[in-house]
Amino acid sequence: MGRQKIEIKKKKEKKSSLEVTFSKRRTGLFKKAGELCVLCGAEAAVIVFSPGRRAFIFGHPSADAVIDRFLHREINSRALVPAGQVHGYVQRQYLEALGRLEVKREQEETVGGDGEGEFWWDAPIENMGLNELEQFRGSHEELRKKAADRMEEMTMIMMMESGPSSTAMVEYAAPPQEYNSSGGVLHGHDLAAHGVPHGFDFGFGFDEHLF
Amino acid sequence: MGRQKIEIKKKKEKKSSLEVTFSKRRTGLFKKAGELCVLCGAEAAVIVFSPGRRAFIFGHPSADAVIDRFLHREINSRALVPAGQVHGYVQRQYLEALGRLEVKREQEETVGGDGEGEFWWDAPIENMGLNELEQFRGSHEELRKKAADRMEEMTMIMMMESGPSSTAMVEYAAPPQEYNSSGGVLHGHDLAAHGVPHGFDFGFGFDEHLF
DNA sequence: TATACTATCTATAACCG
DNA sequence: TCGGTTATAGATAGTAT
Image (tube, rainbow over all chains, first blue to last red; front, side):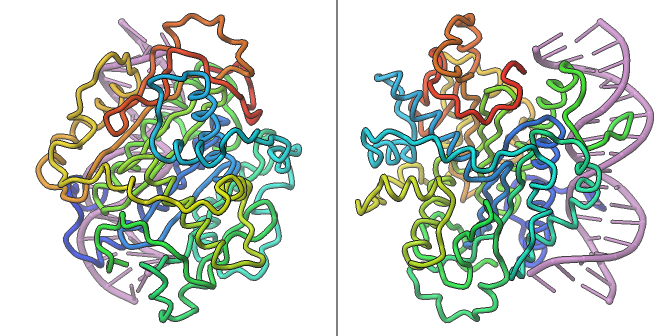
């Protein structure tokens, strides 16, 4: 794609071009996910962590809904299959924490509705800088126009960029406006505030100083 | 893309072409996600539910790891911001269930290692029909070849198709081999068995009889 | 660091088997 | 339902801003 065919084999060498590539490809990935959802009536969530620390989330009808559905499927599946069905530590942890607590289901349908007028892009955008959201709106402008007429199953497409997490809480010294450059839309109420530094860095990062 | 420009505006009209489109685009989406990870050193997870009931998962270094990181980031973020930072019900539920239990972190690094020889594609594939895995292998064949030499940060790319979940457990009547056509690879141990029907259907499905 | 511009490369819709 | 082929729409690497 582009002037030169590129080798998909390793992290790109130069930081600047890596950043540009990451940004472009992440946008493209989210666009593809959105198209898959709208075109095929699917539900999808995409979670992307940049090489540094930032999280970019896409979800339809919402990342939460899809992740929740996934986790519950796995948990319930496991419950039905006592032996040899241990999932990864996420589900294990979740299951252990959950104990035998019955999962409440009534909170699922709060997003429902009949479609029209309930898309996130029609929701009032309040005090959000929302670089990412704006970017998404732009990249999905055509899709938005065409989609507005008939998508009975669509409830909401959510996308957010989580602010950078500090390795402990030490990177608090970073300029606040950098943290405020992101936000999210979810069910009409606030997501985690991005005006504050996040806690843990779980150590998955490769190059802690990229981005 | 293709012979005709397609309108991204609604679920496609014909069931057969919808299925084909879904399958192709899902494959493409996963491929894009994998390229983003390998090329940029990112971590990503993609969860896709078909219009029917099936879940398709992609993750690098694993879906679990990425989802876990995401959930913990949000939870920790929330913990740091007592007011007005309520996240969606997934995190809320997770947090409530977790209570004040300290999250154990030592289980994170079980996937670590130095890369070479630990990719999922090098892991022995046992008794899995694995339509999807095979499909992924195929679509990633070139990437695999090129990637094998130098990806120090790569640990594992995981992809699976979760078996169809029954609305309650009623669709057990479906032919068993259909359930067995999927499987997964994760940390070397089994994922949820796909030879058995899954439990809950969370009611997000649009057309319960598609696919 | 994001966006704009193209030349190229890639994904895929419509077919076909 | 799959997988393969072809023509075309779409994504994007390199570049400049």
